[in-house]
Structure formats: structure tokens, C-alpha cells
Image 1 (cartoon, helix red, strand yellow):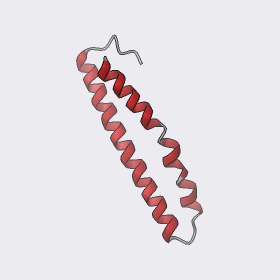
Image 2 (cartoon, one colour):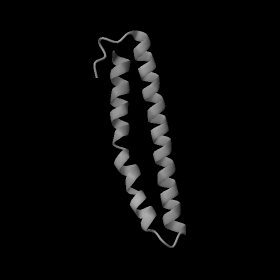
Image 3 (cartoon, one colour):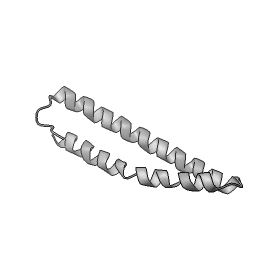
Length: 76
């Protein structure tokens, strides 16, 4: 990510968008995990929820990358 060529306003806008995207991602992944756990505990056919519970763990690897990008933008 090339931050040197960006103006302060563009960096602030990018910082806010990263914060919003990260927050939404955390919320959606948490909701998906809760729904999957609820489905595993209450439904008889667990195959769908068992397959879906992998998704929050797989996609949670994006969250630390976003925090690294937020830190870089704040530093710049």
C-alpha cells in the first residue's frame, strides 16, 4: 500500500473506511458463528451448520491484516 503519495484527507478517509470495514467484518463473522453454534445445538441435521462454522475462522484472518493497515495509516 503506497501511502506517501496520498493527501491527509485521503488518508483520513481511507482510515475511516478501514475502521468501518473491520467493524462490519467482525460483526458479521460473530453473527455467523453464533448462528452456526445455535444451529448445531438445536437442529437435527447438522451438516449445513458444520460446514458453515468453518467460514468465520477462515475469514477471521483478514481482521489482523486490516489492523496492520490501520496502524500503517495512523503512522503515516
